Image 1 (cartoon, rainbow, N blue to C red):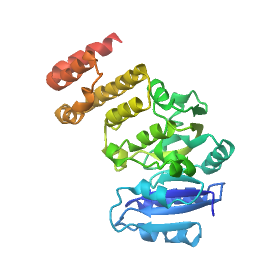
Image 2: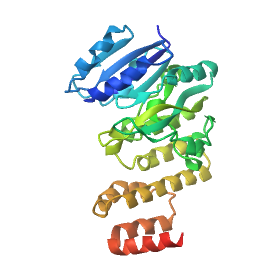
Image 3: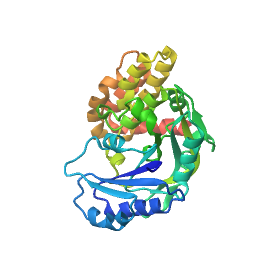
Image 4: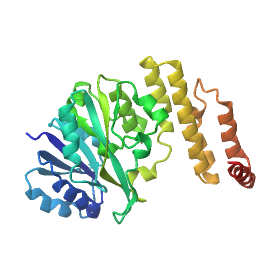
Length: 317
């Protein structure tokens, strides 16, 4: 029995996958088992992984049908004390696993540990170094029970899903899963639920993971992830007796994420996005009239008038 499972989810990225697998082999920590979970690839992935299977720690699973519950499948499959689920298009630095395991071994009250990242391009060149340091003052952060909501509102999002190492006893004993009804932000919803337990979350400021930015990554095809969390988290906060002030801060935080996302979209797409978000924007307890007027202005005002107004605003800053 190994201490850790490293699960690699993959789909039609054979060339990038081998870079991740090489980075796993280069880890200074060796007590791990690797599951390569292939979600119906039709490229040469199966051939690409064959050389790695000579290592008894590596297992390849080819799914014949698209697996929507991919992460939950890996939760159920994991038999080790710890688990990390990484992306096929990224890479890990050599000490990443060692440093994360050391934290979980040392601190029984830590449920998950996650790391700082570099953002890299398709050529593996760094385009943003230590990306999350701007949120954490270049230091490790321990997020105490029930404090994730406040950290997120006041500082920003620092949990990068493929860097998260789980203490599996927390996941199994509390029957935690990714709730796919939440959509693309189901990982963030899981962090909220974990943080409500008697465990802390640990951000390791060391930059140990290289997160690749490219047109074909899953997250680039889904926008407005945080706003879709608005109603589920609103309900979660109410159920767990958070104060009205915290709930209002959360609503304000997501409202302004919605506004900024609508601003970023092309004018012709804004009405469609508004239809998707209408229930979120006008959720109960939302008395931000200025926000609503801003959104209506973005939807109704001719584009040339909007450009004039924004130019004036920018010149006054």
